[in-house]
Amino acid sequence: MTAPAAAPKPAPTPREQLLNRIQRDIPITRRPYAVIAQDVGLTEAEALSILREVKAEGVLRQVSAIFDTRTLGYQSSLVAAVHDEDQLDAGAEIVNAHPGVSHNYKRNHDFNLWYTIAVPPRVTSRRTCRNSTNSAARA
Image (cartoon, rainbow, N blue to C red):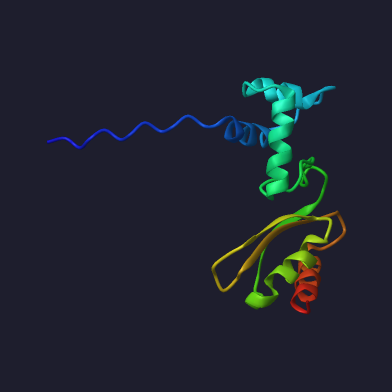
């Protein structure tokens, strides 16, 4: 007897398609959201409406440029930090205040706050990470 065939995976929703597409790149054009919308079969107005919704829901934090830090001479690091559970959000706010931190994640681990940080040439990432982590720990 053969196993039953797996149910076909449902097609991604327009919202899912848009969120996947917007992570790839933003066209350098007069109306970038019109191009992105067209790529996923939406109108510009529909795409902008969806993006406003996911921003309001907290799914999307921001749409911004991400530079190739290595090409610019920056150093980047993945940092794992330990915070008391009741201080984790305050610690994340302090870490996020650093302009080189692009994002962070809460983890169910002894090291419960992970983030990436990029620092410009002639600034050491080790010192910057230590300072950010120490400031966050005092929160």
